[in-house]
Amino acid sequence: MYEHIVYFKFNDNITVEKQNQLLAKLNTFKGTIPGIVELTAGINETAEKERARGYMMGLRVTFENKEALDNYGPHPVHQEFVQSLEVVIDHVAVVDYPL
Image 1: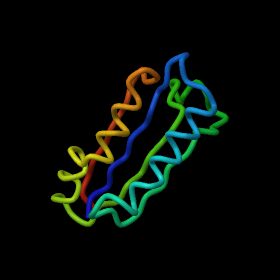
Image 2: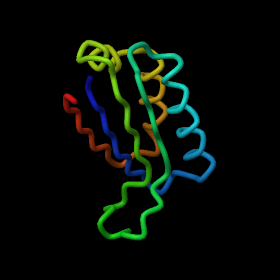
Image 3: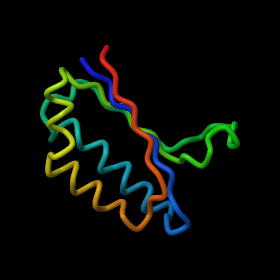
Image 4: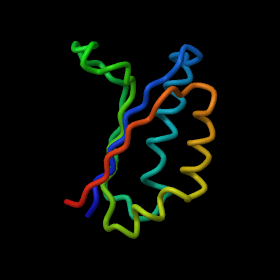
């Protein structure tokens, strides 16, 4: 299995409504993208704002294998999500590792 962790830093164009729309879209991935074993996503509520460095949303996806992780990136549902970030995203940090 492989773990895929993503942190999203949004710009000033983001609204609470847009954050909630993005979160709702992320939560559809498990039922629509093959190879996802488990998925959690949420808005950052840490009290350690300075250490969060502006990252406002997190995503954790467990894939059944490396092939599923590799197929995730180009999947149309994922690509649609990525394109929806264009006007609201400042930075994305990604970490992938085998379990």
